[in-house]
Image 1 (cartoon, one colour):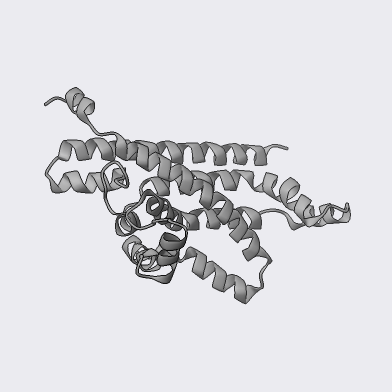
Image 2 (cartoon, helix red, strand yellow):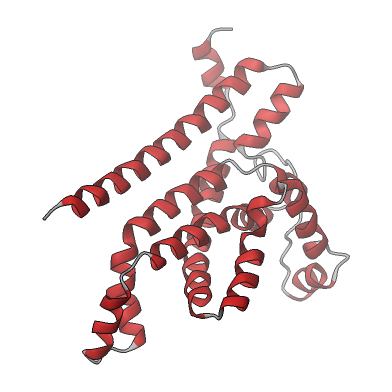
Length: 233
């Protein structure tokens, strides 16, 4: 069977599920990461170290370990999972919501770390000047801090999307591998390799590699543009 025939018969639901999961997880990580970075910056040194350790932990844990903890939390045999299912009729395990939660937990540290790094690079004198002009802390955050941190935030957003798109371990533990529902590209690659279908695995591997490359390429464009602006007199 030639490549054209394989592409015609290919089930594209993993691509749709991965893109949908990646977009939603990125949006959640974007706002949560900015909020957490802002809170961390305003905390004391000891509390900041504790928060930084907790918020960065999913990035250094094996994804399967993170997925195991999520499974314990959202299982219908546990208080949180039982409450969500019985009171709110929300099922997390073996559902697309589980895909989003797993991808968000794994990708969130990238957004948090980039947001915090972007905030730390802002000249404090600009913030002090804004305060002397009578601007409130809310206005300073929206009109001074966020615009200055935009390149770093954009780079973090792109990396977060790429990481959420390729998440496998935690997603498999929490959401499973249900075709057309929770089966992402990463899960599909693992399944077809087990079946010995290396051609299909190669197609999906190339697809996710291409998406990741485009994400990194966009990030490099953003950082290069920022560097060129910084060199202007």
